[in-house]
Length: 183
Image 1: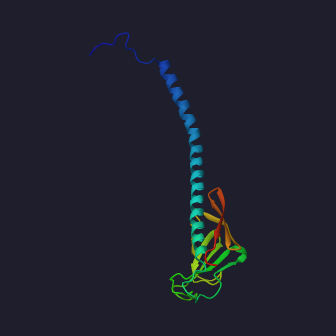
Image 2: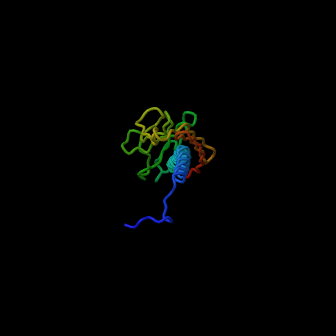
Image 3: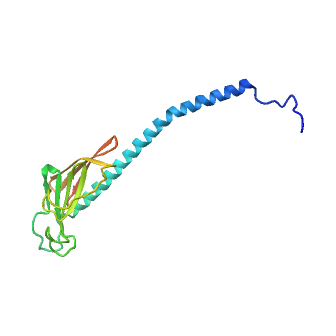
């Protein structure tokens, strides 16, 4: 082994203490910023979830509204669209199997469809003639996204759908206008 020369010296104790102190200050600063960054990331995730879920639900409702009234023949009798419960329930009818008639409520392939707002959920059902009875299925997961408000209003051939969605602390209100195609 070679002996150390006077030009080959390590850090002094003072230099080492200064470096450790600066490192500790940087780590404490990062420690204070990290929870804020996590909160901002969680808020951004909630905002994105609300927007994506609102977009999905509005597209599903638009598709149903555009289909309402379709009949591949002349035997479709009744009203194609009804707005009930002050706009909180939407009942639609269309010839889903294109056989030229609207199958009744009790039929296994009923052409009667419904959408309603109930307990922070948007629900849908097939084979319903009113907003209270029937086997309703939820369209959103309330543990992730709550539907605070749902309303439907018809103005001429247009239908205005409004959804208010909450994900975490973020609330989003979306208005969507659909032109009816089969009035």
